[in-house]
Image 1: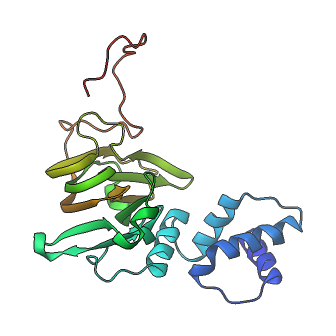
Image 2 (image 1 turned 180 degrees about the vertical axis):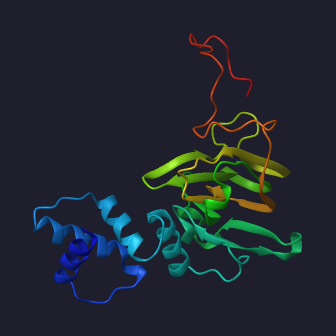
Length: 249
């Protein structure tokens, strides 16, 4: 079946492609298969092309494309810049603050930065060594005039997409840092499923301002450390259904 799929795609376009052409290759693959009465989704096409480049899934290949298209040599080895609007931000090592990493909205385009724009500094790693373990991601953050907020995030992907995700945005307290704040630790704890294929994590700044991060750690912990829900905060029971209790904030 795989040989049939890719011979069909090759008939459509015999140009040699690199991994940077993955989306085009997925499009050509779908077109070639459709002409033979075989329908696949866009996401299935991306997953098939990813396998051809030796990647476990599209998320890992997409991260590789991001690194190649937006190299940033000022970041620590193994880390790269991504997000919704990375072109609006600088991300670099800040040696003046103890080898921390800084994300800052670029002054020259500050008028273009909206509240939902964000930039992340992140890593993507193979999940195999972590499967079946309880893993804690932690990092320290501090902010200056952070508009929408700054926080860490952790995502676990399987063959068909996201299995677990948390960026603390719905947490109260211990959620994103807003405005100007000193160093605070933030953490996420997940039980990594056996079907996990890749882990993705980092920190991001949303909106204007500055955010520094340091002391990242990804370690195994025991059962005494409670897990995050993976879908934001989960209450133990239905609470405040009549809206009678106001927020403490």
